[in-house]
Amino acid sequence: MARRRPWPALPGWTLVALLVSAIALAPIIALLLIAVTNAEGNAWPHLLSTVLPAAVMTTVWLMLGVGAVVLFVGTSSAWLVTMYDFPGRRVFEWLLVVPLAVPTYLSAFTYMELWDYSGWVQTALRALFGWQSAADYWFPQIRSLGGAIFVMAFALYPYVYLTARASFVQQSVCVLEASRMLGHSRGETFRRIALPLARPALAAGATLALMECLNDIGAVQFFGVNTLTVSVYATWLQRSNLGGAAQIACVMLVFVLFLLWLERWSRRQQRFHHTTKRYRNLQRTPLSGLAGLLAAASCALPILIGFGIPCIVLIDAALTHWEVGFTSEFWGYVFNTLTLSSAAAAIAVVVGIALTYARKMDERPLVHMATRLASVGYAVPGTVLAIGILVPLSALDNLVDGWARTLLGVSTGLILTGSAAAIIAAYVIRFLAVSQGAIESGFSKVSPNLDAAARTLGRTTTGTLREVHLPLLKPALGAAAVLVFVDSMKELPATLLLRPFNFDTLATHIYTLASFDLFEQGALPALTIVAVGCVPIFYLQRLLIANRTGEPERTVSASALSGRKATAP
Image (cartoon, rainbow, N blue to C red):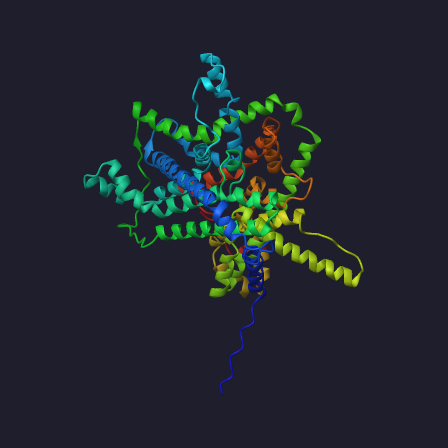
């Protein structure tokens, strides 16, 4: 009888990758277990008859509306700044991404302040026409599904704009010129050539926007739109039914899986071959007169709605209530936010390095799958992740408490559950994909010959990482840290559900003030979030423009082994 071959020993980096993947998947597994073993009894019949039908339909309509608007606004603005030259084009090319710096809940709060009965617009109309009450005139209701679609779409369209513009820039000029030579107009060329080629990019951008839409809790709650996210929050905290909240969260996971499948399906049979290997810069068509003004207005309007108006409202409120802004409580919220975001960014970068380097060192399918699964948290809404994190941390707390009682005769209580550690864990799991993506991009620019040279000179895998890769990856590591830091700073749902008692960040403080109709007092924290959020936005824009113009990349030689960097054009 032939002896079975033993399993090969797994290298240390591979074990790290498998461990991190298991930790990242633990919240989702725990969520499913809570939903199946609901301690409060089977809540599915009640949920199916009362909560889920309305919440699911509202969520579907919200996502359909937001998806339609972000696709139209993002694609049209990207096509205009890529293919045409008109007044202000270079400025719009940069500013069209800045609405990403304004979280959806901040946009919602500012438009409620502007558009509500006591807001600027209706107050001005009553003063102008002499109306005395709301019974004297009709005005669109901002606290509605339509209002939520409008505000959220203009805050999220840059996801589609960025992916669409990157796709349009990379398309072959020869293909577009061939279409024109065959007699197609610019509109037909866009519809029959450029748009099908950009379909995968548009689907990716729309998927990101819709995941953020599904994750939102602040905007939809203040607009009175009862989505699945709001149902999870109300079931857990207001009705104290964790099992029911977990079951609703499982329905949200179905939405996430559907979005991921839809994005994959949109890229089916995408096999485009360029007719030539020569590429030239796009020759933009100049627009002047009325056409140029219309193009400029088409690009300026999304910027104004998604960034300009919210910032104007915030600045006015901050200046009006500046005396309640700079308080000791404000600096406490800043300290909490910076501490949590910095810790999450540092951990996410370290873990991202470990995962990327493990896949580089071990190319087995198991490692590849594990490192990809570790990024699944980015697709999971914050409310879903919060429920999933609660159970593993509670189990770990109970385990530590049991050991302490047995060995020391003391109770440790809840060390992790309901602490800042739970929030940091949620941040790291949710935004690990952001860190990993930036670090992978940095690794791809390092020649594999450097690894061979390092091993020839006697360096171990860890020594090669420390002495060769890390010095060359400083820009990528810095980008990863900044992206995770800002995303963590803006995260509201997970922070709201996992925060300790009497513990607030800038995001939760703004949410609390808006809940009590005191949004003006939260204008300064809101402006702080927006200002910090602009940093990675402009970095991404600069990177995209650099890639388009073909700026030379920094390369290195084997002299990096001795601590010296060499550059070449």
